[in-house]
Image (cartoon, rainbow, N blue to C red; front, side):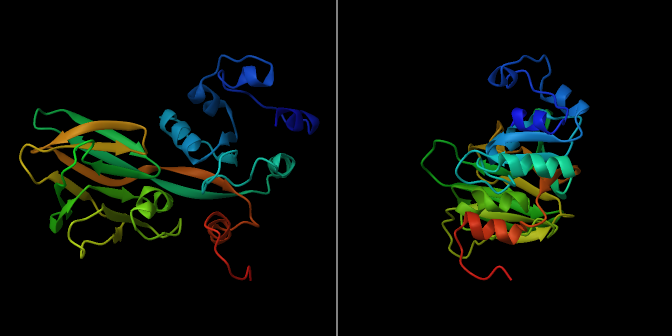
Length: 265
C-alpha cells in the first residue's frame, strides 16, 4: 500500500504500531493520526474499523477500508485491489456514506453514569449463565415489551448486518434512519425484531431482581448491569463518514458478501 502511494506521490502518515510493518517508525497513535489526516485508510476487516472508531474520541475523519479478512460490510475493496484503492484515493472518486453512531447511557443505582458510543450495536446479554433473563424495554415513556431471552441487540443500520442479523434480525439500508431491536433466542416465539425510528430513546432495564446482565458496545467495551440500573440508547450526534466506491452500492455489497443471486441492473 505504501509503495503504491509513493509511486503516485501521495503524502501519507502511519500509526506507530503499523509503521514497523512498512519498514519505518512513527510516534502517532490513532487519535493523533486522525487529527492530521484528510482520509484514514484502515486495512483489516469490520472489526478493525470498529476498534479504530472506538479509539477516535475527538476526530472522525473519512475512513477508507480495505478488507484483508473474510467477510466485511464496511470495507470498500479487497486485498487484491490495492492499485484500485490508491487510484480511488488519488482521484478522490469515492463517495462518503455517513453512518450514524449510537450512544448508550448506563445509570446505576449507586449514581455512576457511563456513556458509550458505537457504530454497530449495543448488546445486553446474560454472560456465561445458562438461564434466560428478563429484559424490560420501553420507547421513551411507552412500554414495548418484556423479553425472556438470552439477551437483546439494539443495532444501527450499519450494525444490522452484524450480530442482529445472526440473531434473525432484518437488514436495514444505511440511510434508513432507524434502530433494530432484536431479541437473542427469545422464549416467546412472538418476540420478533422491531424497527424503530432513530429519534427514539430506547430504555432497557433488568426485569428480574438478582439478575446481572452485561452491556457491550461494538464488542469493544463492556460493563455489568443489575436490577435498578437504567440503560438508555439513542442516536449520537456523531457520525462516521465511510468511503465507498460509486460503482459498488450497498445492494451490490450485500449480493457479494451474502452470495445472493440476481441482476446487477
